[in-house]
Length: 237
Image (tube, rainbow, N blue to C red; front, side, top):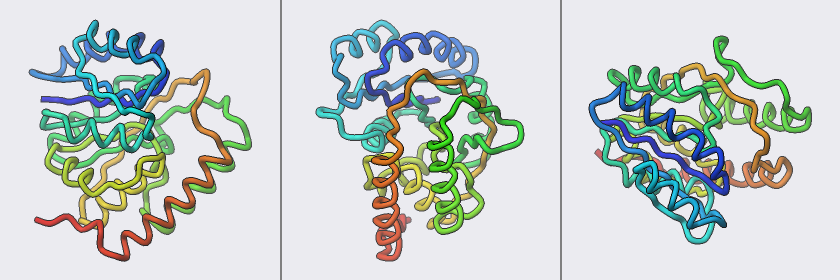
């Protein structure tokens, strides 16, 4: 059984537009599946609930807005599938990546999307300011936190259920840095991290604020380093 976690905040139009294609793919691909919408305190609560009901999705809500890390963690820990994949609820990726991830997870415990792989495609309409900031953070994370992982922030990651739940039981960050924390926990416990290409669609808007979120990321990276040194990321067997 495959569980798909969709964290979403105020992107109801993109969510509703993407759900039919996702469900059609899952119906062809797996013998059982569930889609869990985790609404991170969106202002249009009733609309989100209606979308979930209309598409036969499970619905979880953060009240108030708590951050993407909290949304993904709640969905991961509530999931019933033996394969669990989380993906941004505005559907920025070509859905073929889900097929690939499910295949990889037949024989591996973790797989992440990686926009830097040669066969990935990524929109070029990105501000130079945001691109520089992203590259700087990526280099920092690659060198000091998870060597060999050049795209920690790609918004789609998949896990075998036992591994994913064990990792997310150790995740403490609620903001965008939770992705780094997940990978640090995986490496700390010697899990192999597989990577797969993604094809990214251009998004009309983004919730990322370069300066504010960049500063928050740096503070969170310090917290991750401290937690790691203190042994808080060791998963008990």
